[in-house]
Image 1 (cartoon, rainbow, N blue to C red):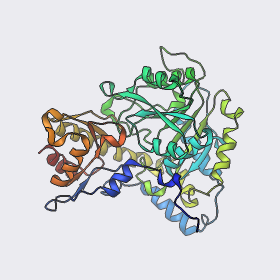
Image 2 (image 1 turned 180 degrees about the vertical axis):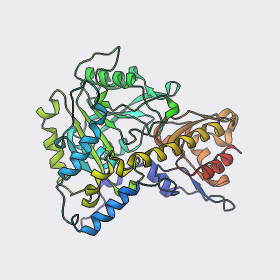
Image 3 (image 1 turned 90 degrees about the vertical axis):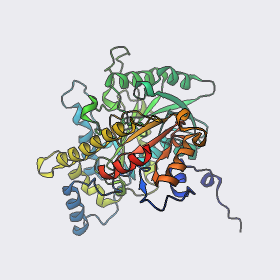
Image 4 (image 1 turned 45 degrees about the horizontal axis):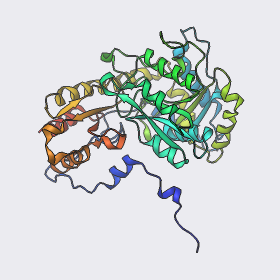
Length: 422
């Protein structure tokens, strides 16, 4: 037989999944393991989906109306609901831009949206710019498509905003051949939320450099009240900088989904939204490319698509706003607990998050000593000695940091933080 494992498969690397599924450290058997490693808001059961969404899904399954195949790019009702949801921030503004159902392509989660967006516009040998620190799936998906990643730096001293000089250098470096820049706001792993002014500067620079913007906004609106920040989509940031040009802006693909906002990552529904003010993507037939790619598999599943109009509805009877406010309040309290507790430990420097469900903690190796020489050694020792599992910054191209997920109940989180600080 001439069968062999493909090189493409064997060279596919997801640092988080590899570490979580394969780490060879036995947690301290005297302690109950506390897992703060994976960004799944459902692990401890304290963050729940809106009851209206659960009822609507049950009704969809029982009715039998969701048993058939959906269109490959999503049902019209579901795509229209996403367009209306994304258009809400534009309602009181002067910007004439609006999404329509034809701009929306449904995907199996936001991860699927990332793969669809990249695959529609890149060729093998092209380059995309990705943030450092950044979510490792950006590299995983690009590498699987034969695309090189060139990193631009985020500045921890400025709440993880983009180093614009680094972005410019990454785009113009010899042999870059960059097609697109990936941005992630609010950020995983940083928990940062960019100022609208800063986001507008990033978008304006992308336009100047001739780059498509692929904006991962799966944590949209997960912004803490105490941060004094508001979420701004890249699609609505055009022209909002006092220093950058107020031109029409670059072409964009906005990525989103229901997994974090509604605490249903297992439902696997995301989207790509095409924002094409100047017609660049229309001229390149990118919508056609997206449609063709969706025909490979008829995803996501029909039942969840049929529930989407209820999930994204602002109608008071669905109480989605109340459910979201409760989820956000718990995450904000947990973030404050993390920063307060970890700040008391001389070896740890937490960088306060402004949203999402993550924070990065800088390790002071001068205090920790040679036994814990890097973030991987710290992660292994913490799991072995205290049965607390966090992720090393190496997973995110952030050596010297660890990432903590603060979605667990407060009592569990406090126990974990006390063990970390010992």
